[in-house]
Amino acid sequence: MKEKLINLKNEFIEKVNQINTLLEIENLNKEFLWKSGKLQEILKWLKDLSVDEKKVIWPEANSLRDFIWIELENKAKQIEEQRFANIEKEEKIDVTADFETKGLWHKHPISITSNLLEEIFISMWFKVEDGPQVENERLNFDMLNIPDNHPARDVWDTFWISDDINKDLQSWEKVLLRTHTSPVQIREMLKWNLPIKIIVPGRVFRYEQEDARHTCNFYQLEWLVVWEKVTFWDLKGTLETAMKKLLWEKTTLRFRPSIFPFTEPSAEIDVSCQICSGTWEKNGKSCSMCSGSWWVELLGAWMVHPKVLSGAWIDPEIYSGFAFGMWIDRIAAQRFGVNSSRMFYQGRLKLNEQF
Ligand code: DAH
Image 1 (cartoon, rainbow, N blue to C red):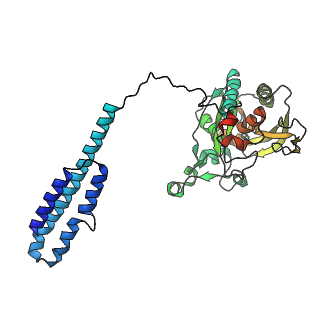
Image 2 (cartoon, rainbow, N blue to C red):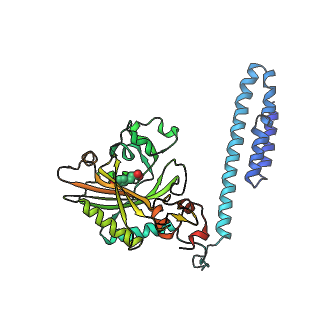
Image 3 (tube, rainbow, N blue to C red):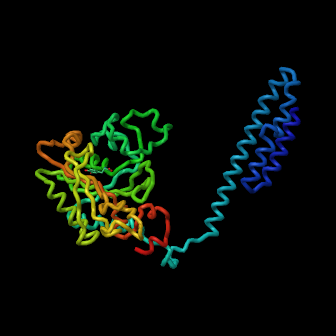
């Protein structure tokens, strides 16, 4: 039996010296080490040996198995190193090469709109901030005055990160795909760097039934001002100026009372629909963008709830905050006359190239 092991070792050494590819390594592994491999074949006879013989053969078989294993690993390393060395020798990257890039790409209408919005607000001295797309429950909900049992949570149909990750976390630490850009308000307030004057363009996610105005992921622009004595007129003035610049001079805004847990009072603001220009119909059908209502909901807004301010250590007796969250996709649809925001996510270059 000992002899068989020695022969097997020699056979292996001979074979391993001849191979040059990872596939061959895999085959040798199978041939020698797998359940039906040659080593196991020999060990089958172990049961017929005496205890004393077993005591000698067993460690030898074990060390042969380790030997084969280590040899295969070393050989694999060697083959990979050789492969990379060849690539380095044979492939050259010419960083000065000039490619024809015309027609290969086009800025997406949502990026165009988002960049325009940034330009407009930067010209009004707003700072552009950013936040993570995977957010924790505390910032996305709790600190925005939407506790666990609050009915408003149902409005934000949430994509939770898998249970594997969330199961051991405290409720408020659980992670999710952010349902809005509003958690960045809290991130900014917690920096306690007043006055705050920021916008936050970004991608958000909701488990939505898709239609002309709703998609499972879309883009929002958050707007936040926190300082002494800011008023509703600051918000209204800024917003009207921005919308007139972005859409057209005749654009009108409609303010409706609404409810958001993180603002008090709250409003929803609509813009006059430019897809059907108030005629309520497009190509003989009721306009799908405004559902024939002439108004398209563009944003939620108004005064930051005192609880939200005090939760972020800002004294609501001294400071007030104004905020809004705007749907960039809908503005893009309005601006470019696209009658369904779903089209923006279909990856059609033909659509993008028109703008
Ligand atoms: N976050 C809200 C949503 O996604 C929109 C919103 C409403 C944002 C009011 C605000 C606000 O900043 O003040 O539905």
